[in-house]
Structures are given as structure tokens and as C-alpha cells.
Length: 139
Image 1 (tube, helix red, strand yellow):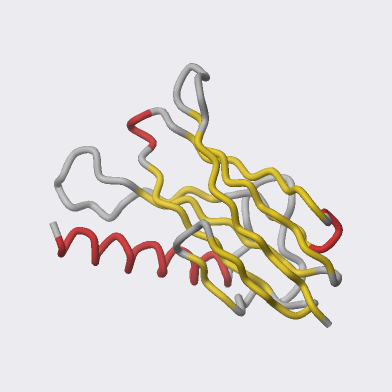
Image 2 (cartoon, rainbow, N blue to C red):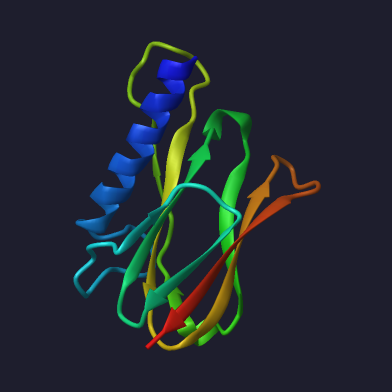
């Protein structure tokens, strides 16, 4: 089990770094240098970054359960830009039900404090779970 957890963390970090050098699929595409300043693998947490820097946020996602992640920005929405999340399936381990990773690229745009609410929605609706990442952008 410990080896599986280690492999999951390594896969999440690799996915985050991969996202940092490729364009995202979805409505928004990366137009500036996408190299992340910070990789966040665990929330809730708070981070402080400088205007122009970037964060890569990764969350374990098991699509076989029907749960999905979304992000809603609260607070100073003009402080950050959140690009569409990308799902990466787990490496082929031969194990059924192993989680993959959803990764978002977050660019600091202007001084302010934004709260990113990561929402895990169960299949068919129902009560969702929310985790918070507070991003403070400074000069």
C-alpha cells in the first residue's frame, strides 16, 4: 500500500510538471511561460506568490466512482486565473479502481487574495465536499 501511495504522489507531481509545459485542453489555453513556481498536492492550505508566478494544483481523482472535481473562485477573483483542469489516468498497474489525478494551472495576475473552492461532487448530485486553497498574490 505504501508503494502505491508513493507511486500516486510521484504520478501527481509528474502530471503537475507535465501540465506546466503543455497547453491545457478546454476553454482557456496557456499563452505565457507555464513553468510553475509552486506545486500544491494537498489542500486545505494557504500560499503566497508574487504577481506573475504560477501554481500547479493536483488532486487525486477516481473517475470510476463517479465523483468529479470543479473549482469556484471566491474573494478577489481578479487576483488569479484558473485554467481548466486536466485529468490524467493512473499508470497501468494492473489494479482496478486506482485513482488518477486532476491538475489545474493557476496564474497570479494581480495583488489580492482569492479563495479557490475545490468541490468534489458525487454522482447524481447530493452533498458535495469542499476543500479550500487560499492564494495571496503580492507585489
